[in-house]
Amino acid sequence: MIRFILLDIEGTTTDIQFVHKVLFPYSAERLADYVAKNIANIEVQSALASVRDTVQTEQGRAISDEEAVETLLQWIQDDRKHTALKQLQGLIWKDGFEQGHYHGHVYPEVPKALEAWKQQGIGLGIYSSGSVQAQKLLFGHSVAGDLTPYFSHYFDTNVGGKKESDSYREIARQLALAPGEILFLSDVEAELDAASEAGLQVTQLLRDGQVAGSKYPAITSFEAIQLPLSASH
Ligand SMILES: [Mg+2]
Figure 1 (cartoon, rainbow, N blue to C red):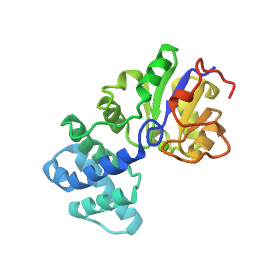
Figure 2: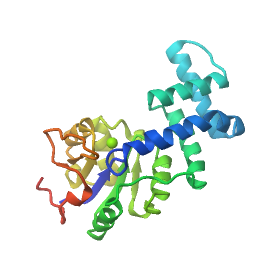
Figure 3: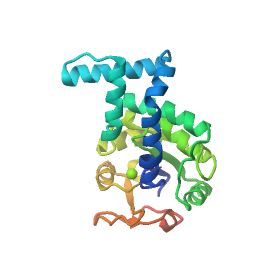
Figure 4: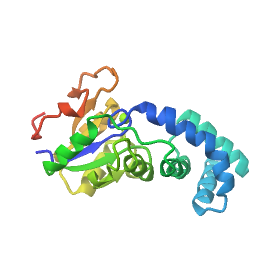
């Protein structure tokens, strides 16, 4: 019996384009200005220190705050998943969401599906490489309003990478559920491989014409998930 549904964001609840066409450009445009204006903020300071540490370790050279900002801009282009970048983007995106510069995209059937699953007594959570703070902003300021009341748990790369099976074991442990009681939904086969190896049930989302892999059940919309959920598939 499925007792919990764990959701990926990009390509699952949300159009990948939202992050790449809206959030990433917004953070790139505002990064230098944001850092300059908030240089006394302890979170900004610790992020810059972390960038300097990484460059010191990888390239063996000390860099200035200006160079740290340039490094961060390059990491945005490279889509590097660095904690310091995630922290700063989270702060910048928070401003944008709170000022109503954009709303978090979710596919049209998502709110109705969340409601139906909640009615069934199924727990709901998010697992994304975006920070927990960014996850809460996206769902808290979504095109369908505040969806955060649906979610009891949010996981990011603090539990480990999404392509590592230990991450899913840790999530099951934190949820105090058997892995087989959790259904993980994602568009990325390598993530489904890792979750499946940890014993979770998995289903692949095929949004916007994505072609199915052959290994796992695949659906184009949450509406295709049959209720009541059983452990049969
Ligand atoms: Mg995804």
